[in-house]
Length: 246
Ligand code: PEP
Image (cartoon, rainbow, N blue to C red; front, top):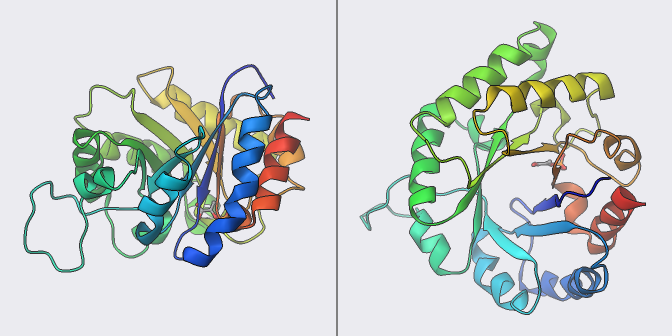
């Protein structure tokens, strides 16, 4: 790809248990032996595994992130909820917020904005997911949706240095479909131009796999990939990283 650091973020969603962790040894040794490539690997496992993974990755450059949090920074009586301070406490350095699977469950831009602010306060770097649904795409509303998500989610946040944007068209997640290369390029440009901080990283996510990475890597303005399904298999995940550079 290029000379810049490329992000590879593994979103494990609600998968994985203690037994899965040995398979990550491969990824640790890969990350240590491929110093010639400039990449950043971040694993976002379910909350139950954040502490284990942060311990496991201690002697490596791999970092750990969470997948969501409650927006409250105070310790309070909210059964079943976890805030960003607690996630930081068990080793998370990043957090994915605004994932479409949570937006579909009713998470609004306003709530995502609160979560982003509280996560930044806790010292987490935030990966903000944005993207249009299939019906919005069909109605040619993609740019309007993206622009609105960016404005509302980042409202009142002056320092964007700890924000990464992941462009994830909702219709591309887990479907095997990806955008046409020219559309994707235009949308990434549009997102970059809509953000005040010109050095903000913009990633692509949605059905990234070992085959389509050959095309995706040609889009040089993409700063990395958020990978769901294919990140749960260490070999496939490593192969995607290798293919990005070869
Ligand atoms: C995701 O859920 O963030 C994602 C990109 O999933 P998948 O790679 O499985 O489409």
